[in-house]
Amino acid sequence: AINTNSTLGSSNFDGSTQSTVKVNQTAGFSIVTYTGQQNASDTIGHGLGVKPQVVISKSRNATYTYTQWYVHHHKLTTNYFLFLNTTAAQANGAGDYFIDGSFSSTVFAVGDDIYGPNVSNNNYVAYCFSEVAGYSKFGSYTGNGSSDGPFVFTGFRPAWVMVKATSRTGRWRIWDVKRNTFNVMDKRVSAESSDAEHTGSTEYIDFLSNGFKAKSSESQFNGNGETIIYLAFAESPFKNARAR
Image (cartoon, rainbow, N blue to C red; front, top):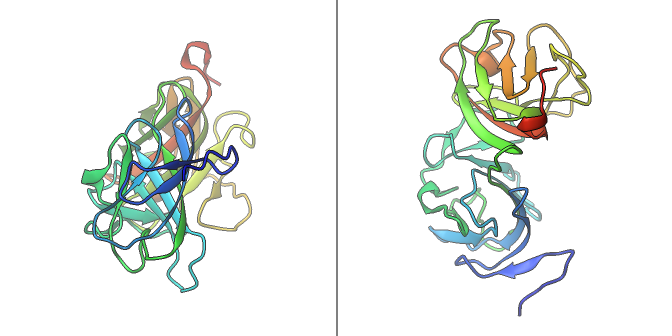
C-alpha cells in the first residue's frame, strides 16, 4: 500500500528496502524512515532526485549501548563515516555502514554491521541533503595552522556553518548569524555536546559575502594539513549578499 499521508510522507520503493519519505527537492532535503534489514548491500530510497552529499541516520528504537548518529559525508574517505554525537575521527566502515559506491540519485546504501545504520528490525530516521546552488554547500577544506586561515568558497553568504576535522578527534563546531551579528565570530556550540554556548579567542571565523574564513590556528578546525568537512547554509542569495 502506498502511504501518501502529508505528515508522514510517501512510501518509496526505489531501494531494496521500502522507505517512507518526506522531501523538499527545492531545498535539497528529505526525511526518510526505514526498517533495517541487515543485508550486506541494502539500498534505501531518499526522494531527492539527485545523489545526496550528506546522510545522517539514527535508530529510533535501539535498546543496546551502541546506538549512534551515523554520518556519511561525500568528502570523507570512501566508505568511512563519522558519529555526530562524538568527537571521534572518521572510522573505516569497510562498506558495512554506508556503501559510498552505491549512492545514487534515487537511493543511499547501507551495510550489515551489527552496530550500524541497518540493524535488523531497528526503525531508523535518516536526514538526507544535496547541495542547492546559492542555498547550501557540503564540502571540505585543508587547514593551514595560521590565524589567517583558508577562505572557503560557498557561493553565498552563510547563515550557519558546522565543521569537523576528519582524521583527528575534534568537535562539531557550529557558528550562526543569530548569535554572532558581526565579524569576527566567536560564539559557537557543538553538535556532540550539551555544553552551553562557548566564546573565546581560539576559534574565530568570519562569514563573508561568498563564503567563510578561519581566523585562528585552532587545530580542530584549522590544523595545518588537516582535512575539515563542513555543512553550510545561506543567509541570502549571492546576488544580494554583501560582506558583513
